[in-house]
Image (cartoon, rainbow, N blue to C red):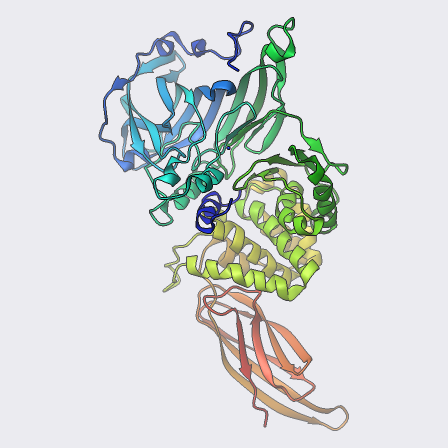
Length: 618
């Protein structure tokens, strides 16, 4: 997933450039009568302007299962959903009521408590709240009364109905001063006959959520809320049964949480001309763990065009651009095959959509435009990386494609360019990392629990680059290719360490403890002392023994290159420095040394990621 809000705000700041169906007859594929009699006869919500709700109540629910029956009527931008939900009280106090939100353009109709004896009606109050988690800048909030309190750690299952429409809206951006045209390129979610695009939590609340209001102008709070929600509900199971009403040509395919399913078409009157013929197109997405993502849903109106190499399938009118996309993929594929395996796991699906990009696993929603293969290749590396490598560990799922992008830069522009890119992104990481005052006060984000892109992408790519330096290309390639077939072992946060240790024949626990399992900040290295000593040997001529002492004032251990240089002549050794420690190395140098360089930028640090000290040889 791309950084939705970072991209959204970047667009604003940079100024970068959206017939009525006839009544349908036939088989019922979606009905509000699917619930019990108690639920289906539920009284409408009480009409009150507001009810006092605390943010503690809003933030106390974690969804552990979504089972959705969704009915789309694109001609009216309509959405009706029967949602079966399992929620857990993840707060510290019993809950006497539950609080849910959907987009302000949708409205709650009923709630029922599911039990073995059936569904019992629950009363609720609906009101509107301000929040930028939805593109309208508001949400319809339901406050649902419980007959008995829900204890901390306890769960219950609910049945809920809600309906309304989802039209494109950029209200949240316009109210903070974004120009209409720029805002529309960022907030493009809608239901329409040409494209249904629903990105989910943080863009459009088309499914039930539970969250305190957050706003774009409140620093990074909105981004943090999105990340924390994804992490908290990564283990939830999600299932979707989708029905799309149409008149004329049927829609082609649906994409749910990055997965693609072909729609099955049921025409209701085959005797009418196609242009007038109504029908229903359906798809079912079996229950699966959600992972670190929102629930996204896209429905396209035409078949994808598949490139000859079958790496890319694109839903677009810009057919003339696709040969260059295929050529760009052909450029990148050898690198991915070399590092990740001979064949991709799936195909990259691209939906042509003007505006800011969105990515979910093997789905990329972005503008498709004419460009040279050389210009397209750098942008496609990350997305193609997702079709070669998947992991339920978010730092690997996003970090490996980001690492592939660095390798592509190294391959095409040289190591210095890749290191410069790594350092540039590490600057943002250094700002995000906490200041660690002692061994027990690290309060950042471990990679296994990261919710911010600067960790699960930027830091993760840096970690893989460092591991490459420590174990070598061959061992890391073997580990990545073995791990992508890990299956259920992938659920274990320590599985990748074991696979890499087996291929490298090295103990790497010291590294994973400081860089993956915990966040101990960044190293802070200083060249404490350099002592050159002249060695006289009659047979081999003059040489120098250079002793280099390095101090690590940070708490994260680091293994860095230490290089002695004289003109174009260099000698390098690697040195590991534990946190809050000193370490030294001695390098035998065959000429008069001129300088010592510690860290070449490949290990991110608190400030500078490279240190140089001139040598005065006597």
